[in-house]
Structure formats: C-alpha cells, structure tokens
Image 1 (cartoon, helix red, strand yellow):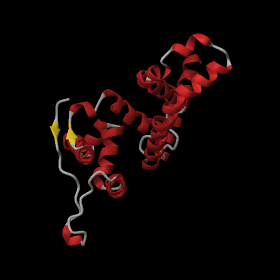
Image 2 (cartoon, rainbow, N blue to C red):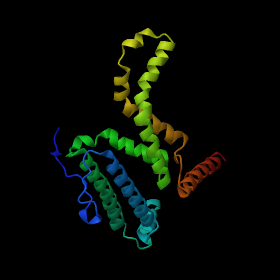
Image 3 (tube, one colour):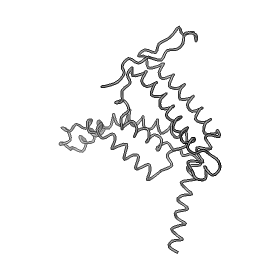
Length: 223
C-alpha cells in the first residue's frame, strides 16, 4: 500500500479549555466532530443555493445559452462550482485521512464513487434532506444488509434443502458482487423513481413536465 503514513490527528486547541486534547483512537470525538462538520456544510450549501451564485448555477444548469444571454459568465460560474465542490471533497478527505492515519489512493476506489453517486440519486438530486436520507439508507445496506445477507442465504438453502450451496463461499460472492448489487439498485431507481426518495419540488416538476411534454408530442405525431 502506497501513501503517507502517520497523518496528524485532530486536536482541540488548549485555549478552549481542553489543554490540547487529542482524539487518539477513541471514535466518539470523531463522531461529534463529524456532526459539527455536517451541520456547517449543510448551512453553507443552503446559503450558496439561495445566493446570487446559486441562482446563476441553476440558470446555467437549465439553459447555458440563455444564462449567457442574461449576462452570466458561464465559464467563471462553472469553475466556481467545480472549485467549491472540490473544496468540500478535499475537506472531507483530510478529515478521513486524519482518522485513518494514512493517505493512500486505495481508500478512494471505484466502489466509493459509485456509492456516493447512489446516495445522491437514491435520496433525490437537488435536495439536502434527500441526500442525507439516501446516505443513511445506503450505509444501512452496507453495514447490515450485505453483512447479514450470507447468513440469510445459508438459512434459505438449508430450509429449501439445497445441498450443493453448502460448499459455496457465499460471503465472498456477496463481497465481490457489491458493485453489481449497487448497480442494480441504481438502475431500478432510475427506472421506477428517477426523482429519488425525497425529491426537490423543482426537480419533481421538471420530471413530471418532461413526461407530459413527451406524451403531448407523441399525440401530435400520431395525429
């Protein structure tokens, strides 16, 4: 494994009255620090979305040509979106590295990127509450469902008296098939509920309007 080993741990400053308290290996301080980071991130994102820059982002997303015609610098607006998004990701990565005591490219695998995408799509794009719900659901699937799935399959094979599956490494198959499982979930969501579990009002209207316009165009074509 290649990377930087021995990264610094978070430490509460002494001027706050904790005398330079170090987090060490105790997961509880990391949990509360993560809660603080999440709250700050949500407040920043809400303010950005309701700001002039946030409205410019929405205008560029809907129609870049029309946004440029109204005087919005589309290049600068897109660069700011990329830079701010990378800033949030970098900040989260620095926190994660301090918790693992190592920085290595192996920690950000393809499974991680697919998982993050699935959290956003499942919860509902454009909605902060939806993304939080999607993250909780996917984490529950990873931490509980995928862990318990081999036992459930083994119990089912015993109940159904399927003997040849007793010598199969079901747990290994489930671990290796996690990408396939998440891919199937993503496809099912996009087919059955593309707006997500808790869609934003604007996103919901866009999807319903798009479906209505397609139906009207089909009727006109058939006429």
